[in-house]
Amino acid sequence: MKVSLLVPVYGVEKYIEQCAVSLFEQTYEDIEYIFVDDCTPDNSILKLQSVLDRYPNRAPQVKIIRHDHNRGLGAARKTALASCTGDFVLNVDSDDFLSINAVELLVAQQVLQEADIVTGCIRIYRGEELSETLQVPHEDKKVILKLLLIHNTIPHNLCGRLIRKTLFTDNGISPEEGVNQAEDYAVTPRLFFCAKKLAFVDTPIYHYQVFITGSFSDQISPRHVESFLRANDLVFSFLKQHDVQQDYQFALSLGMLETYYLVLKSGFSSQDILQTCHYKPHGLFKMIHLLLAHKSTIKLFRFVYLTIKWSYKKHLHFAG
Image (cartoon, rainbow, N blue to C red; front, side, top):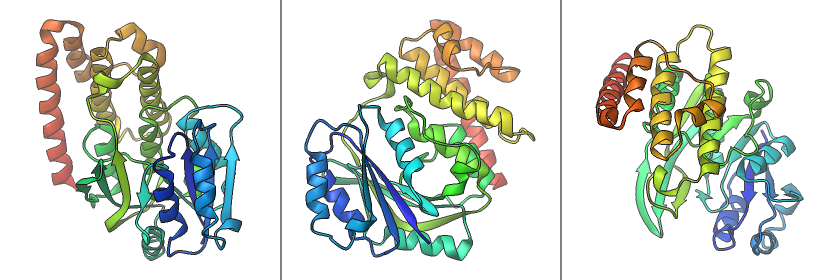
């Protein structure tokens, strides 16, 4: 079974050596490496090539694709996916790295469970210090997808998951050019909706390095807000079309309340949101959403929202 490792490259001269070494030293052999140079302005590609020279056995498995102009993370991932030929794909950001046996462990679990998506644990580093290890929630697909949709409950990372390629190709799912904020969220819930079988690896697979701290509103720009809204709208529009039984509408609406709150907090207006996002609250959620219309009731909104979210999470864990 061939696994394609998809790696966008931009501005990672300091980190790509560690990443590339972890990829080329994988204990699993049948790997295809797709690196997409998104017109990086530094020496990232030269560093990558230097590392590759130390692994001549991997050289025939490597493709380096260069964009003709800088197009962003979403486009780089889209290019990588369109160019790969593996049965399964594994996304890796080029400032992160994998455990040496990551692919082998993921593939073994996939074969054992005949799974469409295999998720392993993530280690998070802040600087050079290990900050925390995110464990894998062993829940069924419906529970995991609902937890993804309500936001900030379980990781929605695309990187570090072994994913059957046909989940993308058969369902018209792909990273989107221009969606560079919440780009993982734009894709992951849609893949989980289409997956029939999940599997889990209870050891660290993916090592994620955090270089920026602060809140959403501290760092967001208008361009990033639009991208964030587009990501949420992609998920909303997909589920509106495909969730015929409406199994996920409550969770989706709850998550969209959080989206509206964050975007309004960043300085956008309700009209700005409606130009990008097609979701309109209804029923209970319309009443709660009205609390966002006035500064005097935003604290009440937050209390009501968090109370409902806490209760819903309890319900999901009990039901699961």
